[in-house]
Image (cartoon, rainbow, N blue to C red; front, side):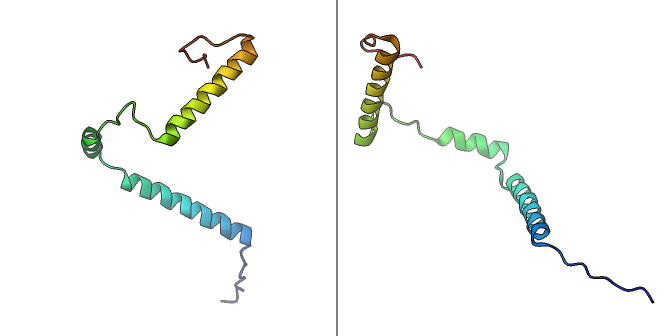
Length: 91
């Protein structure tokens, strides 16, 4: 009983490192527990309604128009001519 007990303080860097490792381990454990089973995943996939095509909001249509214009201008810069009518330039 003549041994001296030395208390060693822990640095902030070590404390944060240990905390980060603990959170990462907890996250991995929880993600495995929260994953749906294969049957649940298949069941949910069959009930989703397909998105309607050709329907878009005003903002989406506007964006597509701007995007088409950018692609045509880029095609003209790179190829020195006009883009083929009705077709989008190759990416």
